[in-house]
Image (cartoon, rainbow, N blue to C red; front, side, top):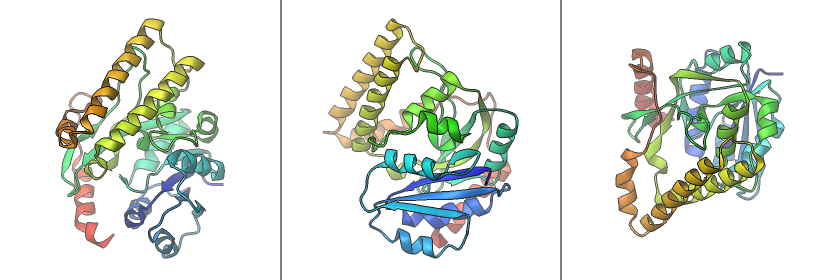
Length: 289
């Protein structure tokens, strides 16, 4: 059995598959399987996958789009590795990502995560997403697509198949609350932010996150006092109300995106020349993927 099961829910993202596979081929650690769940795509995904010959790739699919919660849950069910690694097909990954995750695994951690470099559609660097420190009502958390996790733990926490968006909130909040994590102070993933920025998605995501947070409070899965819960939920409801108003002024929401919190990074942290060169390599090859 492989060490890692890389899980990729895919819906109409055929254009990114070859780029994703390119970064997978460049990994310095190669004991993996790639689980791709086609969530009812209507593009040429199947044709693209047929053009990649690699026995480590395993696929499954739904004839209709059921949402990312379903697709991630199905990918976990299919996984055979010791750990699962989130490998979203529209993101990119530095060559040493799996090697770094394996070091955390061998050190006895239950999960690990890292920084995520943020670029625009032309691969210009916009910033880096770090870790969000513990605050009243929430544990320390991280960007979901940087996650590697013991498979059984990931299955125990799971993804709600009823959630079409923001299905990752529960697992990113619960892990630090109850398990031993390795927070890697390095960018191991690359997120192309501008492609997905829109007010409709923001409203849906925040509605889903708020519902999950309420559920976790009821279950006692997040430790917080009654006062902390009240303050956190009130702030979230206010944020959601503002976002709903912005649906009438979508241009205003776009202007606020640069103001969002990216979390914190280690003092003095900088992207290495090797990582800068890899981003440039991706930019130069963008047209050929």
